[in-house]
Length: 446
Image 1 (spheres, one colour):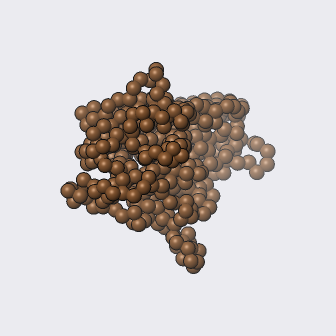
Image 2: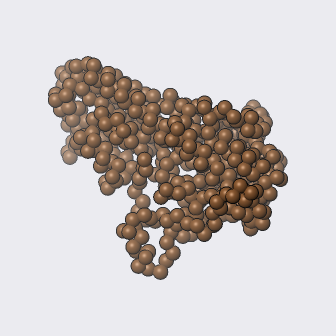
Image 3: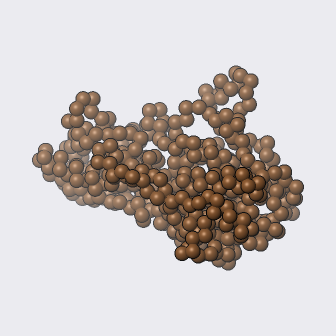
């Protein structure tokens, strides 16, 4: 499962350069375990098609490539004298506990780090909010069972905090490495921390782990939690299909997560194969053509299944205005709106029908990680530890062209990853699978 996006151009070699705290002078304890080490000049090509690379090959430029993730033979930090911190921000997502556990176990067992702190409730805990309380002391015993649970043992929160206060807190606690688990907003916050740390000349590494159930971080093929979300979405769609088939002109409608990127809806539609209409933020639609297409479907098969991503159809509703605590625009609730509009328009056309509406969003995001995600979380956590111990900073661990990579945070958050509606293979497969026609009117709304 490799979601795609439209990238107008490849990043430059400079865009891909990873920051470092300084030279590595400490021998890695992993040498005793015959670890396969990765050198900093081991690179993973960004482009994988000849058409992408040919202009560069024809010129005299270096090929853009990510720094490959993995254990280094020489470290910046002495593992026996370092304190590490872990913070998770934003909404819940399957796999947070798996990542926390992987970080703790790798730090403790692989490197022998003596002290690991877990900051409660996101950046609020890192800023020292007295209501949140002190950080947790994390040990292998403390995290032993958490990977079998959903949610987050550390808790989470949204909203910015004072960057200077957070760095003060890191210095007060003697933290030399901070792992930030989160999506776009969290990573921007982590990069701001790295910038303040650099301004002070402090030796603190900041490494991100990509957490977004929408899978919308650019230059990372898959963020953890996405595979679990698609698995769980399938169950909701299967239920909607059963409900639709059980009634005359039955319509099963499922709303899935996806504020600006419709990857969950698209991949769930492909996985189930019973979806007739897939509505995503990247592909605007109009109610008139949708109703006409729905009526045509009901006349032939007497049932239909519709999947809609939460960010789809926002232009059809009155704007709620404002932003949430993370700075994201507040969305209108497309599910109830669409159910009401479709029912009203079908009644006006005297089309007998029933609509069964399912919204599994909060169930999906609070689930334990699926086996695929659990394994992925483990590897992300391990690679994050390797990067931090070598003094790499202001980066997020990614996955690209079958390899784990180091992605500078500034590049990862430069633009949101979305479905390529015009040329992307994924969306074309969705259209072939659903058989849905264009849902835009050429003139005024029907």
